Image (cartoon, rainbow, N blue to C red; front, side, top):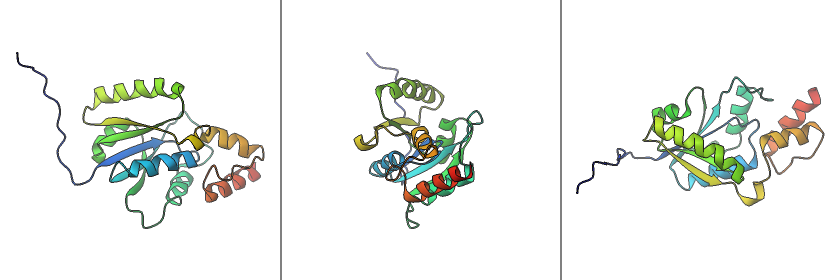
Length: 175
């Protein structure tokens, strides 16, 4: 009996690329943990700020781009920062990415992320989704919780890079 299923074999490329999407409003130590761990698996990580018109971010797109860039040494050539609007999986495919990285903090994250991964797989079979569990020390933080704490004068030092902590102080001193 012969099988009619022929698995897709991606063309051999010299570097493996992954896209790590998010709103990054702001970038947190949890995000940085995922990025650094993704660098252990892939040659290049494209950190892509997803433009979502239904969200009202605290920081402008330009501010978020700069905060992410400032989170890495200038000589780090394996990390690229970009923006994406439209279908993420199409963007990833266009960039030559083999995968999309998604961070998971809890089982509740998995249900939604699993649905997205299946839809992305249906749209573009050449792009995989790779789930990374957030490091235990960052499992309880999110950009929303960070902003809420900072807005009320809470110390978020150590939960975000120092330059992001400064930006949060500046932002909430204006309001």
